[in-house]
Amino acid sequence: MSSVTIRDIAKASGLSIGTVSRGLRNQAGLSEGTRQIVHEWAVRMGYDLTQLRRHRIRRVGFLLHSQHNTLASSPFFSSVLHGAEQVCRRDGITLSFIVAGPTDRVIDQSRVQQLDAFLCAGYFEPEILEGLRRTGKPMVLVDMHRHGIPSVNPDHQRGSFLATSHLLRSGRRHIALISGSPAHYSLQQRAHGYRRALFEAGVQADPDLEVVASHLGDGDAGVTAAMRQLLALRKRPDAVVCFNDSAALVAMQQCLSEGLRIPQDIAIVGFDDIGGASVAHPPLSTVRVDKESLGAKGVELLLSATTQTPLELVMPVELVVRDSSSSND
Image (cartoon, rainbow, N blue to C red; front, side):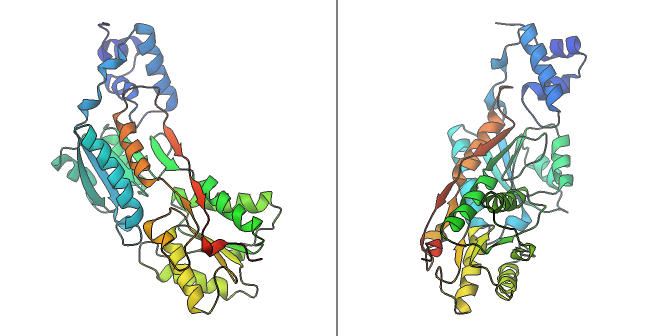
């Protein structure tokens, strides 16, 4: 067995011991160039990578932003949490659930609970992520992306592209998008997928058909207002792609309350395939995300001990067509 240590690699490479340690463990806070230098020195010197054992992480903090801790968001993030719990239970790791907001002292909470690593689900302000990164502890983002931090995401752009392309194939040409804050990586990507589908089909994008539902974490009011805005247009949309299923169900209810038939007058597609989508009236078409796999892969990425692990994992999605978007022929 090789007797080369992290200290030896640090001395030979001119890097600090902390930098070498983070590089070998694929932790956040290093550029890809520095990470590659550490790996090259380790290989050159014959460092035994099996020394980096997974069981060194004993307690993981599952961090959820307070804006996601709502009834509308819970079907998605509860499943992500469940997937993370399964892997932790399998590997004898304690998982602590923490709801954090922009003014909460997340670092203090992590010290009190003696966390070894962080699994951050959904959106977080850059300041919170930077504070967590400075601890030097392993961190993985789930349903969020930030350069230099390992992340696991569903293929947001592909999913929205599939949903919009499906509507185009069914004969819809005046397709609207109800989105949310562009600060959210997932919503940025879903909007890109929507626009790309229109572009590739040769359909002119109409800025009036893209509406942002305000107050994402404050219930249904923002989505209801967005749907009313679309229906008040001189030429109302014949289909709507919504940023998630909870929003799509609210939008669908608003259309029904105004006397519209779904899908004959207007088709609606959501995203995530939460439990309520298949039992809605009519059943909601959506993009299926394996939410439990997101949480499971996030923990597995935290526990990975090799420098070969990719920094960004993109999970496949699947379009599920139900009655809310069937052909209007």
